Image 1 (cartoon, rainbow, N blue to C red):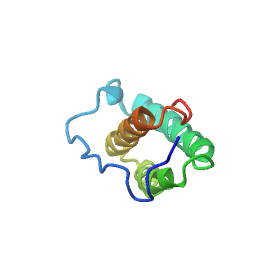
Image 2 (spheres, rainbow, N blue to C red):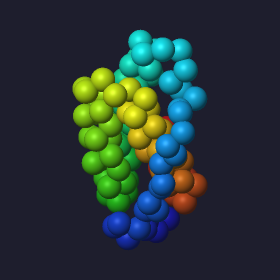
Image 3 (spheres, helix red, strand yellow):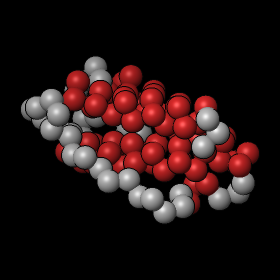
Amino acid sequence: MPSPASGAWPVIPFAVAQSPLSAGGTGMSRAQCAALLVRAHDWLERAVAQVSGVNGLAPLVTQAVDLYRRGEYDQCLRLVGGVRQAIELARATLPSLPAW
């Protein structure tokens, strides 16, 4: 299956509304953010071997890690949620990419 040219992944506008994942307080938000960051990192490691264009998501994951380190869990959740949306769009285009 042909892969899109580098930089061909769509830019995803990230929602600014409260993330439904963050309900339940700061401790839950922190744990959810950490879990999603690990999943995003693991997915990128698996997927970049197949399609190098997905490495364009890495700076967003890095930014989400920075938000996590600063304790800005709601913003981290929104950003990593947007990364997940981008992953799902990429998988719709290239179903051979690994599952989230």
